[in-house]
Image 1 (cartoon, rainbow, N blue to C red):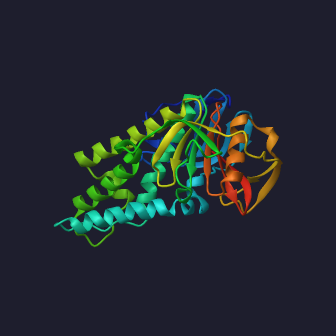
Image 2: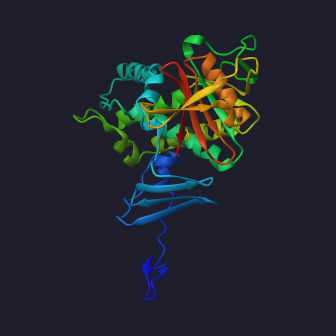
Image 3: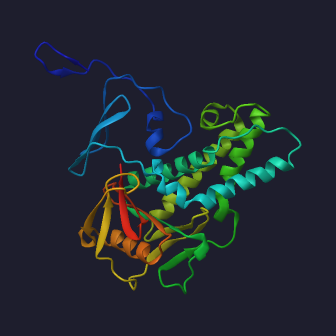
Length: 316
């Protein structure tokens, strides 16, 4: 845009950037070109817009509220720590495949499994926000076992039996790790996210599509009444989960003011809807649980215990 002779802003031209600039928010494999150091406005719905300087957020308006920071829970320290067993499982399965191969495989960066998993979950959340239906994803601790109909905290309407679908997501991530290591061979430099983005390979492209199909599956399951229930190893237990109303009510919660809840504000729990209050009850009863709640207006809230308190983070 430019300023005309009367001081008004005029549109000078339009550039078709495609959808790759959404990668950091919605997940994806390939990034778009870097934006120039100029003001950029993103409008994704009526009354929902964000103003950037290049790719740095200046301010955001959503549901009548203005914020000036981008809060990305996937960049926190606490969230990856809760999925340590899952990431170690991915690496262990990759190591087994590597040792069975007669060929030399390239080493991988330590962050690559986490980065791939995070991109998939970002895509799930983005799809749920776009649907404007609302929904929840519950991660239950693996050491507590999968919920059963006899357990008091989740009534699960639709359950997945043991099948390839149940472990589909971890299988795809391990296959991506294996394929990348195979393609790049025995090189001195570890292969990481950059190579995942830029490597041209039909098998890798097919696996990437499978990753997004899994994201669409989880988002579709979340659009039904009730929550999608997954273990922290990312096995899909089932969907249509209803958090029991028999669990004790939570009167007060902590609202995190930073990524790792170093600073919080105490709030009453009654100021939100039933979906959020049920998430509070579950997290209070099951300390290792994590609930991602997506509202109909597109708001996203992560709920977990932090230092023994039910804490929530608003996701930009």
